[in-house]
Image (cartoon, rainbow, N blue to C red; front, side):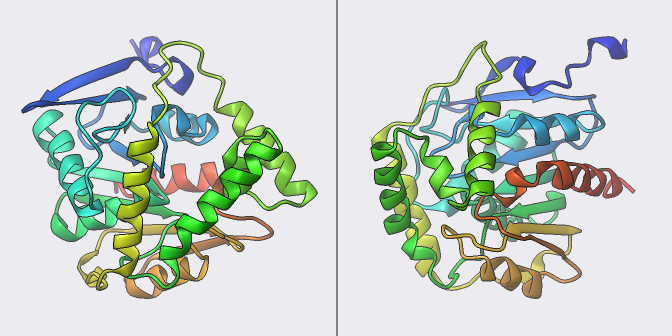
Length: 286
């Protein structure tokens, strides 16, 4: 029976679930269990933007669910104007759509901001929490993400590269190599590829991040779940000091900062990080 369990993200079936008038696109893999790990993705990302090395490592022992936010990829509707609304949409997908009352969370960048809003509003929903490449509501200099993003997109066009090579990785020899390898890994899935995000949806997400960065801080003391925080030491998109800020504000959280790496530090150091994340998500089961 276990032979039929899919543990490769490249082979995870594309699914949809209807919630009211909305349709959420998602994928799931790994052994079935009562409490799954739900992945919250980054700015401009679709189902195809998760690093399969990290997903596959976790899916060996945990049930993994990835999803497109409304207005993105194969999900219906439009991107909400605030990350609070995106968190409400995620809650509807998880609870009303899939019927889960408890989840573990893996989040990256903007996904980590949405995940924070979700757990602050519904602290009993989240058992274990992984926050990577992200920062708290009201985080210092988070509103500068727009300038950084558009500048790196411009640089990527000139060099005919993927923008993520500039946004996620340092531009030294090691970072350039890691960036190209990461982008190649994202191409491993060849069936049922997702639709790229539209320019309008991307712009709306960026504005929502700016609002998040300029908002009053959330009370993160309500987060009592075991929490793992990770980033690179040179994150230009969500400054690395904001990971340290999260660590100070979330009691008993664990912090990992990878050297000589940027926003995509967990992808550059996936060989070290993937087993750490998998072990953390196994441990929270008790």
